[in-house]
Every structure is written in C-alpha cells, then in structure tokens.
Length: 179
Image (cartoon, rainbow, N blue to C red; front, top):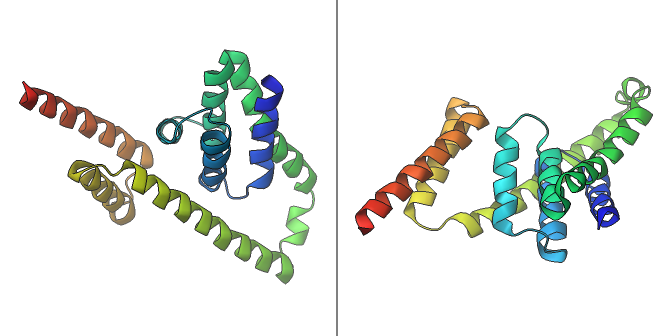
C-alpha cells in the first residue's frame, strides 16, 4: 500500500502542470473514481483545509490522503510522491530557466500550457459545483464568496473561514427550527 501511495502521487505530480488546482481533475480521477480512497466530498474538504492552511494545496491534500490510508507514514510517503517530480524538474531546470524563457517557442508553449490548465481547472470547478450546490444557502455562499474574491480581493483563508462560520450558523438555525 505504501508503494501504491507513493507511485499514485508520483504519477499525479509528474503528469500535471499548474499547481494544486490543476491537479484537482487528476486527483479526482485517481483518488475518488479509480482507487476510491476518498469521496468527492472528502477531496473538497481536503482542498478547503489545504487552501486555508500553510503550504501548497497539492502537498496538503497528498498528506491528508496518505494519512487517511496509512497514518503518519502514509502521509509522509504520499507527500514524498507528490513532491519528487517537482524536485527533479526544478533541480534540472534551475540553471536553464533564465536562458530558455526568452525563446519565442518556449513562450508560446507556456501560453498553450496555461490555457490547457485553465480548462482543466474550469472542468473540475464545474464538476464540484454540480456536486456541492444543494440548496439556496449553498448558492448564496458560492455567490458571496466569488464576489468577495473577484471584486474585493478578499484572501482565500478569510473566505474559507467565513464560509465555515456561515455553514455552522445555518446548521444551528436549521437545528433550532427543527425543534
């Protein structure tokens, strides 16, 4: 299982470009659909917690999944799997990056990669919206969060914290009404 954890996250880290959000579709496919190690809801929870805690989202998610599967050792192994490709690539490119980023071909390739990553993130976002919007309160939290981020540049940790508090308040109100 530990080798499987390492290789799964090595694959995710090797085949995705663009950071944690770009890894979301692959994590969803590998961890939720294919391996069934976690549910969609857990993946969303891990992303939310990973967004609001220090560190890189993908590494945080890998750590959470690894920990869920095999405790502390699993968390460490999954984390090592997700960071290995980055360490190798960064080490290899560190000396070259300043000399190759001036080439038009490299610039065009990066623009194409950025567009593809944007499409992947949009697809994952739309899938999660379909699965998480369950009523008017969910929609209002989505609309308010988007507005605060887009128009007022409110930091993500404040959005996640505010949404958590709002969710708790809504739950308590609904619970009180049920009595």
